[in-house]
Length: 354
Ligand SMILES: *[C@@H]1O[C@H](CO)[C@@H](O)[C@H](O)[C@H]1NC(C)=O
Ligand SMILES: *[C@@H]1O[C@H](CO)[C@@H](O)[C@H](O)[C@H]1NC(C)=O
Ligand SMILES: *[C@@H]1O[C@H](CO)[C@@H](O)[C@H](O)[C@H]1NC(C)=O
Image (cartoon, rainbow, N blue to C red):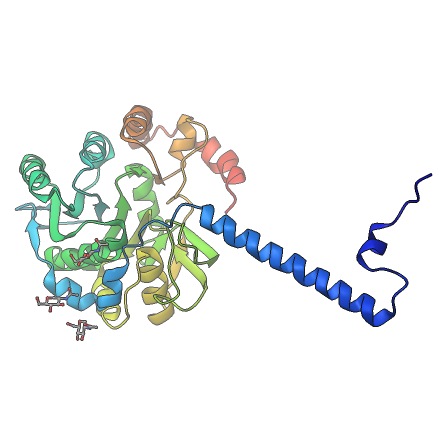
């Protein structure tokens, strides 16, 4: 008959004295820890290398002023809503990039017709010349593009947002008092009718958007929103407005920009402008409005689209497909024939409490 030996007895033999048993246990524990550490190391080595961070320009200089002073506007419309209209309620500036022609076309064919909309872009990397010609022709044809002389890159979004504010204060000077700037992206579908409601209900507010609360910053290099500690020390952001679409009161733009000139820039434009500059430094109020949603409806139902002023991450085709029903509802709404009211007032708010 085999005797059963408990594993613990093998590891820590009974016959020896207590000190020996303790020492053996300690050795076992350290071996296990070392193995654990080694496994972690090897695992890490097996991962693909982290994507290039392209944050080097922040090591060179983080003064927003010194960047902006070096960036000139290459193409802009000869006349805009600010030079043509008496009253401007809202100016929509869309972050785009040279090669995203289809996204711009989708917006031009849909919501862009119903609210003054301009695209803001920089220059592309190696193939600057080809795209420059295309962009120049496109700008001539549609008169809705503002092209700046800086490298268009995800990590340069902060510069793009700053350029939007600077351009608006320079070109819409007369209108700033009564208007709001809506900063959004080219994969966002805006519902112009609901956007107008949002504007009316939030008139006088400093900044309005989809408020994100109590977020920890991404310190991991594999993340798209990676923000290294050398750029920003605090790990925690109590509140900021999602960069997919936020409104800034026109009369606050130059104060925000001038304050930003005193604060080193970071790569996350929404955290930087809405939290670091506006909230933390200037003490402005960030107003939450769930209709400026950074999400898209999970069901392509008419009334779901009607409950939101903005929906994020739509391909050009999704945008073109969703638009006809929104337009029909919008035209009915203009005639006072409000559809979806029951849905929006009751069911919708229950589904999306925040
Ligand atoms: C960044 O630019 C500013 C303004 O031009 C300048 O005063 C500052 O010395 C620059 N910093 C570095 C590190 O080059
Ligand atoms: C701006 O241009 C000046 C002169 O060409 C240069 O010395 C400086 O480094 C530039 N600043 C930045 C932030 O690129
Ligand atoms: C951002 O733009 C500046 C100015 O054009 C440029 O020096 C820098 O390399 C750009 N950064 C990236 C990541 O493209």
